[in-house]
Image 1: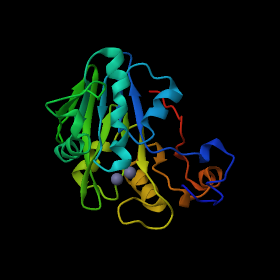
Image 2 (image 1 turned 90 degrees about the vertical axis):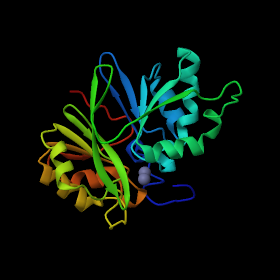
Image 3 (image 1 turned 90 degrees about the horizontal axis):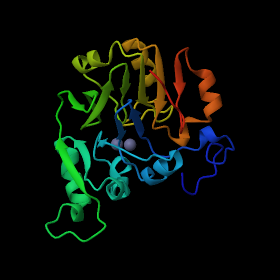
Length: 238
Ligand SMILES: [Zn+2]
Ligand SMILES: [Zn+2]
């Protein structure tokens, strides 16, 4: 956090250095990124990502969409618009916040974006089958996504029972955990642990972690078997 000198913000452990939450999902034929955070450009540079087939959005909060402008580097290489998958709520925000990319008179160098509006129904991108999971971020509907054995949920603090069913049977899940203290729109540590145990997913990784949660190594030691804190650069294979 800017201007903070707490033990997490000043920690020398790379696992305590957290950019905003995002994931990249890859199959042999397809690469998608979930959310373009304000750190999207650096995240792509750091990993040396050469190609992204599509961006999928969870919800329209700024920390999840702000980096979209930087897809123009991919436009430059592919000479094609970036395919974007977003629900109507997020689409509205994208059209408002990145109005210049959608105007009739475009100037050179702006991002080229093609929005595919999604709902709560499964959709496919090449060989990737994606099942949205509706979760609640206080009163905002947010989309989690199941990719076969793997489920990604961020920015939630409540999931209805029928949507929870969609997560069951996953080999691994990611879920947001902000801190130990309760929060109005994010799961805290106890709530996230309880959710994973209720859904009986054997491997879970917490994300969207605030500096208020504590040091990575200390919290990792407190977690039940199979539950971990994620960290920037973590890779999972299925
Ligand atoms: Zn949010
Ligand atoms: Zn967020």
